[in-house]
Length: 346
Image (cartoon, rainbow, N blue to C red; front, top):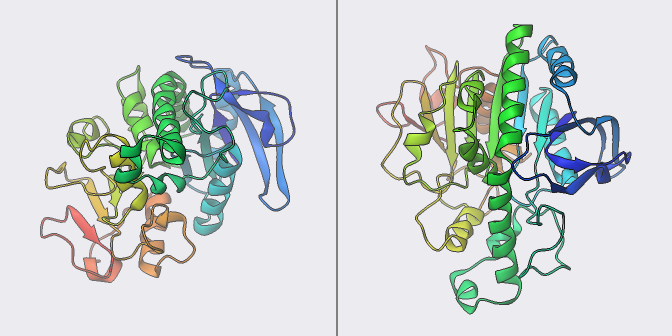
């Protein structure tokens, strides 16, 4: 797998090569080839701590002239580098596409890698699901593990804002390499807080135009406010389709809404009725099909339904979710909205 990052990198041969710290507001990127798994460990090779445009272009163009469409994945909250690697490998196995991951400092540390005030230093890193432990009652108490989780989440949000220049540069490099290769398309997928990270980045130089070079763009369980989402979604116009997945039972996003002082539902929990209506837009509800209670990473769950796997395989493979004469029940299993904007799994 190819992994890009804005983390400070070292020359270690395992995941420790990707540090916790980063340069705020900088467009500096690192990249490496990653092999292995959680059981045997991760091996880092061809690591470049300060990537030049020429370095990146050579590697990216090689992927875009390969035999398969490419999936670009931006992870969400509290993903260590190893967790990012594991998710990318899972996606490669499930969907059979080469994956480029972007690892960003989402664990909630300060930019120098230190533990911030109000965070329990003994907490384990890398569990994107642990935010679901945040409750309204626990937040009201304002202490202990709940407050620590909230503070980490807020710091991760800040780190995303401070990492925008690096993501914008990565998107520009992707678009340029794709244009030069002019062969394989790519799908841009952003999960959870990674979707908010993408939102922050779209106003930076060339970012929205570069994101729009993707064949498909999919926001998976996006941890961003539903209110006003159609404004910033309109900044992206992929060549194919734009997707938002949601699950009314998503416990992680319900907790994130509490952590953010009840500023309204998250897009991946409930897009509400104020939808972005465009011919290329799809909202996909996974509410009745997400494996497990409170599902947040249903797109990477081996227990997903055949219909869900089929649809995500098409989207991640830069295809349309449906092609005439196919109809909703044939692909999704349930009839969606009359205007085709919302699709529903059973």
